[in-house]
Amino acid sequence: MSEYVEYVKDVLDHFGAIRVRRMFGGYGVYHNGLMLGLIVDNVLYLKADDESVKLFKERGLARFEYVRKGKPIKMSYFMAPEDIFDDADDAKAWASLAYDAALRSNRRARKPKKRGA
Image 1 (cartoon, one colour):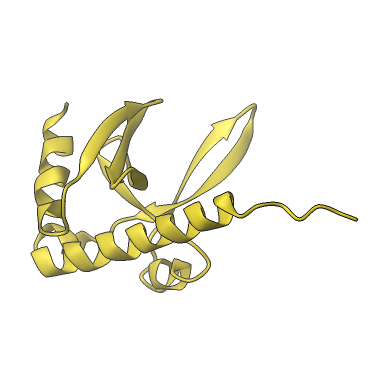
Image 2 (cartoon, rainbow, N blue to C red):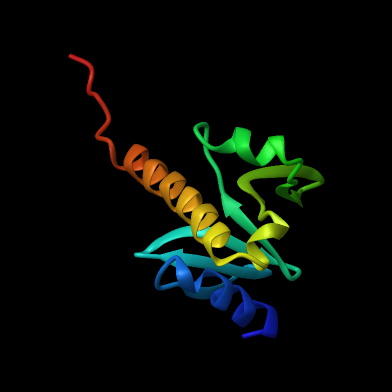
C-alpha cells in the first residue's frame, strides 16, 4: 500500500477500525464491511447521500467522477475536507457521516422488492 493510504488509515484511526482494499485504479476504504471512502490518485473521497450531500457541497468539495465510454460517470463520493487531516475529532465526524451514508445505502439495497398482485 502507498504511504498516502497508510496516512489515511492513521487519520481515520480515531473513528475506528478501517480496512483498505485495492480496487480498480485506487482503493476502497471500509469499516464493518461497508465502503465509506475511496482513495484515487492520493485523494480521499467520502461517501455521501441525499441526507449528507449538502454538507459536502456547502464546502465546495468536488464529487468523484471518471470517464467511461467517453461519458463522465459521477459517483456518490466527495473529496474529504482538508480539516480532517489536522483534527482527529473532525476526521471522526466526517468518517461517521460517510459511514452513516453507507449504512443508509446498504439498507435501501437490501429492501425486498414489492411484488404486484
